[in-house]
Amino acid sequence: MGRTFAAALAIFAVLSGASVRAHELERTQVVLTFARDGSFVLDVSNDANWLKLRMEPFKENFIDRVVLFVDGHEVRPTSAELMAADTISTYRLRGRMPLEAQSLRWYYGLVIDPYPMTIRRADGRVQVEEIGGDAWSRSIDLSGQFQRPRIADRVAPIAAVGLLAVPIALRLLRRRTGSALA
Image (cartoon, rainbow, N blue to C red; front, side):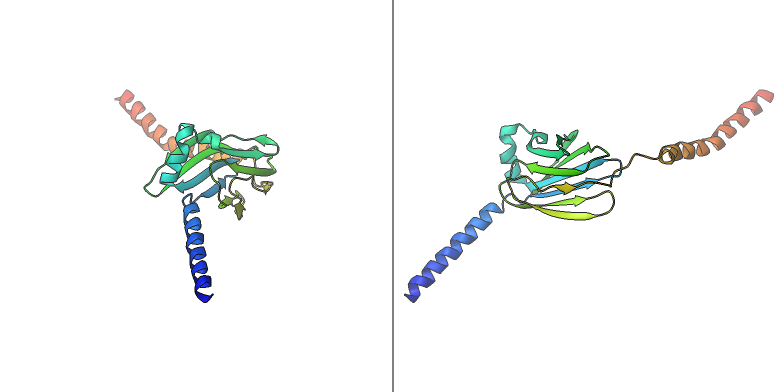
């Protein structure tokens, strides 16, 4: 009886290990980073070979594989860029959230295993959500982190360029008036 139990335990351990390794192929990681103006960068990383195979039927249309559902409306990324590597490939999506956004629900339609999603808020807070694979995230709080650009933020760069341009303009003016007098 001891040998039978040991053999069964060994078979169970081997089979359990094989199933865990098979699902680790996805190696999914998601990082969503927000800026104060509502813009976001969404990095979705997976095993390069796994991602290539999963994307074949979709003709590289990755934007349609993710859903950002904000306050009851879909927010679509405006661009997607594939940063391919030998082991891990990342799709970098960019877009903009409404400044008054309160909550986000997330869905990634290619994976089946749980994965971490890191949210880097514009106010400096970081939270990590465990997403249940082929499932929607729980509601993620977005409130209070976005704001409209202040007038000073818009005027300051223009003023800086103007201050730098004044000495150049004066030098050109002196050269022009000096050559006109000669």
